[in-house]
Image (cartoon, rainbow over all chains, first blue to last red; front, side):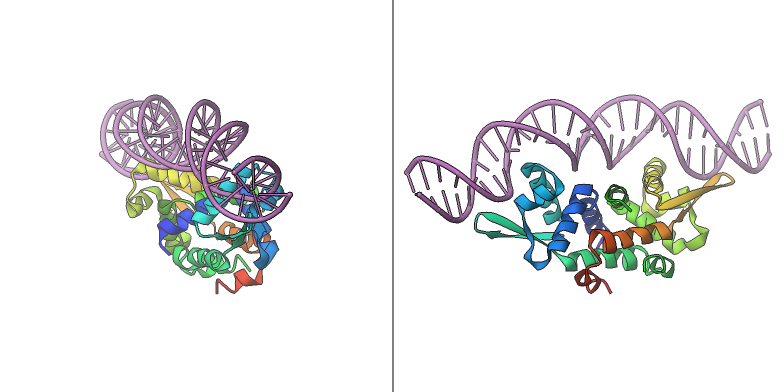
Amino acid sequence: MIDEEAAHLFLALSNPDRLRIIRALVVAGPEGLNAGDIAKQVGASASRASFHLASLSDAGIIHRQRQSRSLRYRVDFARLGALVTYLMRDCCNDSRDLKSCCP
Amino acid sequence: MIDEEAAHLFLALSNPDRLRIIRALVVAGPEGLNAGDIAKQVGASASRASFHLASLSDAGIIHRQRQSRSLRYRVDFARLGALVTYLMRDCCNDSRDLKSCCP
DNA sequence: CTTTTATTTCAATAAATCTTGAAATATATG
DNA sequence: CATATATTTCAAGATTTATTGAAATAAAAG
């Protein structure tokens, strides 16, 4: 992953509501959650939640799938994992010092 | 770490030049680098580099120490490690799926 | 004390993001 | 088809961040 792409992902993670959305989607697991329930869980308006979901979706951190009238969102674990790997390996040079700091 | 703090750290990581600064500081190791050399390495103006360094410093990702006329910067591995831990454990609920994606 | 070197701070403008509610789109149901 | 539900898109103003160069600060040297 190149620095520009990683920066884009980190930008998507730079908002507390979006972090809470990710948490909710991780807890929800493979079933995912629809947009309305996500908005309720983070206490955002439908339009605000939609904005956050678009931001995470643009970064490839989540994906969506229409299910009848709802849109179901799921987290992309591989994408998040690739970011952690980038941070440890590419950005931080596989530093032993860093590895020892996150058990 | 609370979501707001993590979001602040992710914001500091959301710029390619700042990611390159971190990489340079990790490679430099405990000796660190002074502001001028960092600016040269990332190809930024002194003032722009200073802005980036302030952003990383505010987030606690790097620290500085005056050394004669120069300011020497060092990366805070524990702080970066805490962010990785937050992402894995608190944000992503220690998900096995995520762990298996970042070896 | 003046000059030089290293770095930050400031001011001003440009660019991006946040926030809100109203309108638009997509799907289902009677 | 008309209506209801779920969600997104759009517009407009407020707030924040980016970028640049000039001025200010700090420390060393002559």
